Length: 83
Image (cartoon, rainbow, N blue to C red):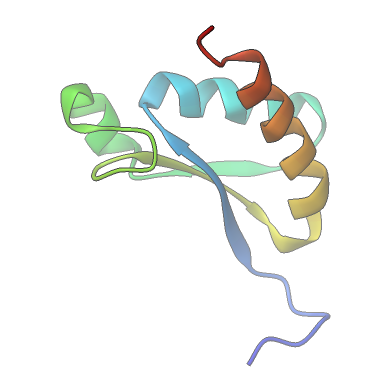
């Protein structure tokens, strides 16, 4: 069981390597440390990745930054919706 003072990684976004890199950049510009998970699959086989699906690249942040990161990701997703 996790205590309230424990720091642990949380997935904040998943998508193609290009989307994940964009979100990572936005978060880092807001001074939120991030890392990508499964980025090799997204780089070597981009046709295999699907947002939230099999092979997607995940953007991971600290649980301490989750709420701030969530707002940035929501804004990114709102701005990238297809009309």
